[in-house]
Length: 341
Ligand SMILES: Cc1cc2nc3c(=O)[nH]c(=O)nc-3n(C[C@H](O)[C@H](O)[C@H](O)COP(=O)(O)OP(=O)(O)OC[C@H]3O[C@@H](n4cnc5c(N)ncnc54)[C@H](O)[C@@H]3O)c2cc1C
Image (cartoon, rainbow, N blue to C red; front, side):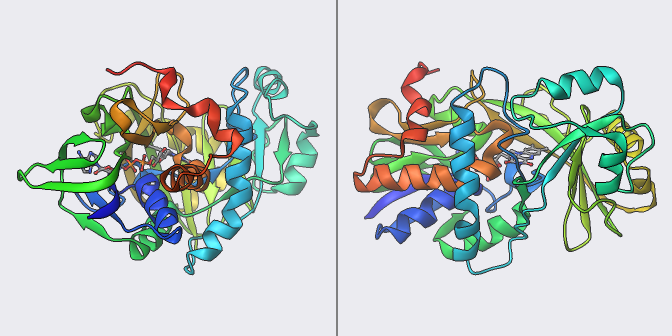
């Protein structure tokens, strides 16, 4: 019998299982398709507690900051190159209205003039009116991260779970697996266990070639994530369309147009692919970390920040599984703030 089984092998299920195994537990991840085939495969991999902070969304900042602080050790302990790069994020305004919006962002530090922005990133368009820099923000390659995590844990692919209790799961083929605890980590599909998450579609474009910038750059409409290996990710739409992962011409047009307006050299890069994924969004867009009804544990609802929040989520769930108190930063994200759906 396993000490814990995790339902869903995205970045969250895999990270939690890995950290739980490191604390001595015998664990298994049950994944309906292939590990990392959900949102984690599509994500850009921005680790941005400052730029992602929402006005009034206070508890997110300490949670996200702790996770970013954990990242260097988390990435190094995996023993594989996951593309972790503390390159910083430059947020730019393309007109005076956008400049006003940027200055009101919760993470805002100090204003950089247009020429200061261009000194940092000579590829920026002449439209850029100014911006601000978060030097601590970083990126990781989510596909390499998921592959490294999947190498570290027992993942049973092709295992769809149709029902859960505190200590057992039922698979679509009728098989039952009994475990000390069950943890739902099924991302946007966690609703099957009564967890209130909805799918929020996002489309990204992947390009390849000479790096158009030395750090991540974003405007109000688009972000560009350069990687050391020549991949450049351009994202992302935010669409409420249920479980639809169609790639649309309109989204590709909008992302390329806005990316080009910010960094014109993007036009010279090779177009590699366009993908759509489903972010797990909770009613307040904050994650659910902890015990759900009937003693089932949940770790989902990470919305736009599941890659960033993987280390702190794994730390929290591993602590709960071994009977330790989670870190204070995770307490506001107890699932009991919501009712079952
Ligand atoms: C376009 C886009 C860009 C993004 N960019 C970023 C970013 O830059 N930085 C960031 O931090 N986050 C980003 N995100 C968000 C991030 O991708 C998600 O928050 C994160 O991947 C959620 O991970 P997860 O493991 O919960 O879900 P998923 O990765 O979706 O994994 C869930 C897994 O559960 C499996 N599953 C579902 N139901 C069952 C079942 N019944 N039985 C067994 N298995 C099941 C699925 O097959 C899937 O593999 C982005 C998301 C999108 C869509």
